[in-house]
Image (cartoon, rainbow, N blue to C red; front, top):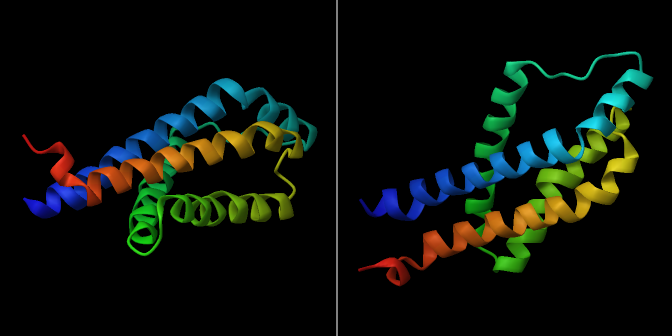
Length: 135
């Protein structure tokens, strides 16, 4: 039961937060940038159901990574290390592939930092301060 409360529940809660954040950012805020950029490359934006499944898996893996990093670092250190590994490296790769619309970074950087901070906060609060939530 302790594992459920201190590991699984925080990771699942964080995965849900990350998934929702990614969906809102990429479907409602930035989708037109992605579609225009892909169109300019002569390819269509990958919008099939399998892409959503893969992003859900990415969200789970990102939450697990944040959980692991948070065991050794403070909240802010966890936030910035996780953000670097989760987003900066991804942007470097997709930028190198030529499929990153650079203009989105004006929005994506602060929104992804916010997403990662909240994700790190959820992990820290639910994993390491369970006494705060006891009845």
